[in-house]
Length: 493
Image (cartoon, rainbow, N blue to C red):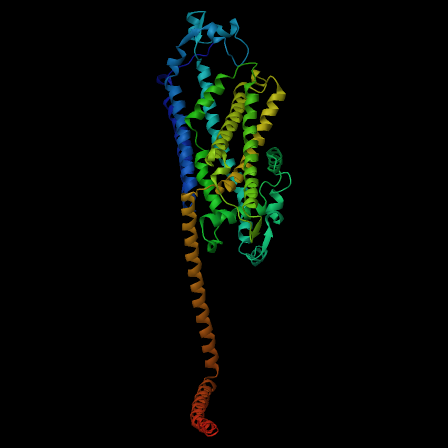
């Protein structure tokens, strides 16, 4: 028997006020927390991350609006009746029985051949699914950017190494080498590179072990600077530029396009008992991230082969030529679209698993096959780590080898670069002034200790210098006269 309920007009005012106070307080605290994060990011000049958070807030607002619509239209939805025959098709679990439909909703109470389109309890469960999806979107966004930045942060030491004397000696521009004999050539050019199948197989396994080596980073850095700057800009902070570029791409990663929302609807539609759709769904992100990672490694190999074909002898650092032709459809952004879709589907997969486990229990019909459940969870975690820590940083590096440069990220890094140069010059000027003042002070102190000796020394120096000038002036005509007298007489023709 259903538990009787009563409206707000029969609810104590203190209970209404207490619940409202708790909800309002939590909302204000969350809003203030987000405001503090945005303020901190702006203080540290992370405008791209601020835009990403704003984009994430807009997506969460859409989820909140969906939940609000469900609440407003709940009474109208549960009054929509459909035949029992239609309700027994494409069920996620076993078919209904007579006992299940006896007290489900008002439609079954009116007619035994009809049931509600969605029950009131089902709408509440949809509310929970929207909440879990929103939380997982936030968690996945934080994990993605944290793991990717942690990997890119390791490249800072490689970038600083380019300013050392050892690097300049090792990459002497006057040194000639065969392209195949360079470290970059030995890594990417071999006797089997003529076969596309062998290249893909080699690059497929390379992404798991040292996907980005130091020689790859330094060579691609040199190619990027040579293509978009002059040779005198060799101290360009390429690692910082990659970070800025990734932050710009992060705005796309946290967003949810209309196509992805319709994909969610399709996934919910085909979740039929016995089809095991979510088991096959878990393989889609895994296959995508593996193919994309292998493609990015293949692009580096193709640039090495192009370098060898253009000039078999390299001078100084190996020089690769950026081009959009290396990417699918000549568009580097298509790779980011695949990674975006991969992360979204993976987040949806894990959100659905958590929602089912919390709402229906681990022993529900959704988890009839425990082996499938374990496989799905393991794949979801592996894809998240592989995509965030390996594939996404690899994309951030290789994507700079396109024909176009990201003007917004470049303008920001150049602006920061100029500010740092001005600060460095200002500090150097202050240091020079302080050193000159301290040096003059030390000389003055030493002069005060023996002022008499100092003044006498000055007089002695002045006297000796003046005497020297007089002696030199006197000796000069004498020497001139001696030289003129010793000259031989002119010859007579």
